[in-house]
Amino acid sequence: MARFLGFRGNALGAAMIYMVIMPAYILFGYNNAVCGGLLNLPAWIETFPRINTSTTTGAEKTNNSRVQGTVVAMYTLGCFFGALSCIWIGDRLGRRKTIMLGAFINIVGAIIQSTSFGLPQLIIGRLVSGLGFGALTATAPNWQSECSRAKHRGSAVLLEGLFISMGLATAAWINFGMSHATGSVTWRFPMALSALWSIIVLFTVPNMPESPRWLIKKGLVEEAREVLGALGDVGPNSEQVDADVQEIEESLLITGRGNFRDIFRPSEQRLFHRACLAACGQMFQQMRTFQSGINALAFYQNTIFEQDLGLSASLARILGASVFTWQTICSPIGVLTVDRFGRRKLMMFAAFGMGSCMAIIAGASSQSQSNSCIIAAAVFIFMYSLFFPTGFLGLTFLYAAEISPLSVRVPITSISTGSAWLFNFLVAEVTPVGFATLGYKYYIIYACINLFVILPGVYFFFPETNGRHLEEVDQIFLDSKDIFQCVGIARAMPRKETMREVVVEDKLTVKSYGKSTET
Image (tube, rainbow, N blue to C red):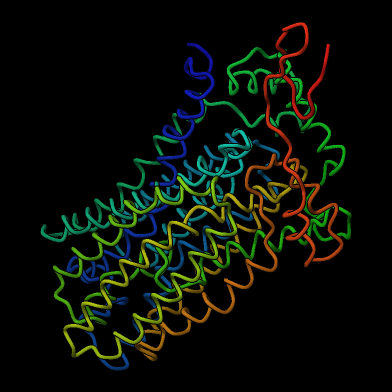
């Protein structure tokens, strides 16, 4: 069989996206949404009465809400530890093997969950599934960004957000369809189906290239040349590959071949500063609103529409699935604009839009007896789903990988992804209690977080990485003396020219990076 299934250049990049990244991130969305659509099913309640909040009242409902939040959030807790495990295994195994390991563990978790006959088994299954997927999500963005050219890296990685939305919509519509069936198959089949996406990843990623940056870090330069040549559709000894290898090696010389402990030591590379930015970006993704496609809306969408807005169970499921379908339709906005407008502008635009939507939803939800207010609340939930994928759904994973130097990229992205799952766990844990105690006021908290924490936080502290080589980003932090300077330095620093053709006096055309050369 031809190496990389015979793909080269743009075709190889597309194969990596649609054969590995797409099923992996459909799984991301699917796993996060599938449980939320099952919580009100009769067969689910019969099997797990301890987390029944649909037919209980008073103190029993409050207590069950706490248990439900914990059970649902066990998956994200597993993801947290799975992501952190990559600090130790990520650079040892490489990008591909870590992705394969995560996919395999997720399959085991799906089997345990779908065969559950009691709450303890369900909890164990969710933890195991989370461990696998946490490792996968901490590694896949690194692998993709390290194999992408600077010019198209943003749009390529932001496709992850589109695929997450596809997974959310798939889970919601499958749950809606299964709600018309009877028996335990209504929840066992959706739980088991998550293994399908992992199986696809498990069998396709071995046929894709390893990260050339990881290969060079490990001293496997010749293999890295083969990969870079295939990705650029040029020979392994071409000038383009020579320049790529030189740039990566120079970056390693500057940043060193670091380890996890180096992040917490003072250095010119400002590793701790970069780790904090990456972690804060992922934290913002989870804390910007309870309505996150990754956290509470995914977990509790039917409860929100049915119990808080007073809609029928059937209409609540249709609207919940429609929100995710609409989010999928809106996701290409970010893909098409991230390399044009940059990372900062999209994040600030999304934070302002989501905060405004939350404020309006809070006001409309306070008048739940008014049909017009219920309609307004539903409309702005859909509006929120326009802003969210544009600025946050996949962008924070991209940003974390971009600001991390190669020497400690895996530890930093593991920490940042772990922070995403940790805050995901917290939001999923407190959401049922928050709704039960605060009602519509719970929305106000997240409106303020968006408008008064995330928006100014991105403006003052997050440097722009759009269009820069990953090695260029290192220089931004090398030149920064404190946390306030990097934004201005990034704005003033000229971008390195990408590969271009230079026609010299003797009409010989040569390819070079950076300044023109004459022969």
